[in-house]
Length: 482
Image (cartoon, rainbow, N blue to C red; front, side, top):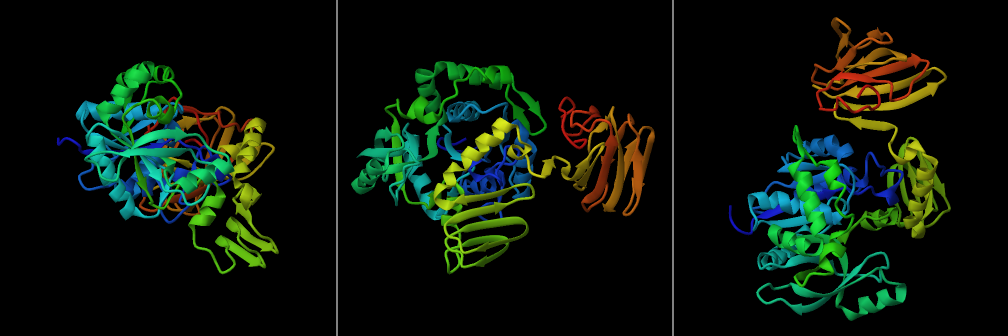
């Protein structure tokens, strides 16, 4: 394998709390199509398909593994691997895991470390910046990408460039990193021309980063090595050992390495970058009507200006307003001053304190076999709409406290109920008695849709005993017979 081969590594650990109610813990912003037809992680992976690059290495949470794998299938990409983090440990441990994985194949391999939830409008400029960074990374530099600022932004950290690096045109040494500034300081940075937004993207040789981490964070590298050594291989996933990974320091690559190393370099670039940190960022990125409004979904406006309106359920109408954000989902409505869109996180904090389900999942909940949506619930019953993908099958399971009634409305279902296996077609139904071992499968070529009515004295999601599962989740308890 040639020295300097590019290994794209995509980090997908963020939760995107400031984009609630669309972005939630079970379906964060990088897995949503917020800025076009594809999801943000799909755009990132396709952007990283550079000439001579290896297939991408993806790092994501355990709970997102099937969604990430399915979204890669949708764009025809087979990852080098999907590494599952048992919990978030910031970017330095993730970078260490990536470097250890790549170094096992090629110590001189050059990693392009990207976040999965950024927008880059100018891909040609991005490719040019990567080419410049590659020349410096091959020489042993740890390169970050500095975004040319167009406003005195106080929400980003900054990088001050130093002297140009010989033999790497367009790349400068890093003079210093600056924390998020106040307005006056940010205006000075903008005026100087020597400061750039810290975009959180990096390029480095695997062994170079590991050497720096061993110097500045030796315990972190040891923990990551142990987590990889004891990792379980599960289908297409590498599941890090939780007890070992937990020992890794929860620290960013900026604090762990970049602010300490003498190898830090920066590529100043103007690539149309945004970290989409709030609804106001999406407003600025997308096409607006003559009154400055971004409209998505069934929306009517009258004398409304400079607003972002997204409706996923029913008609949403605005009259005589300006500079607001309105986001409507099945179970939540957000109305915010566009200039205070960052403060949505305060609502998320309140949801967390109250233990509200709207923090974690949407009404539509995705599973590896398909999805389900709660329709109605009351004393002793609840109703769900279930969709099973072609070839999908739920686990073989039973419930101690509830019975289930299934009515097929589209497609064909194969039902296992104790010792019986039979087909159900459209407009046919069956009854699953309390305690029966049962399974639902879709043997057809179109999605299977059915209505499930649960009845019983206890309808909690933990009332499930799983006997067999096609997706390696036999020990995991979750909703709707997943």
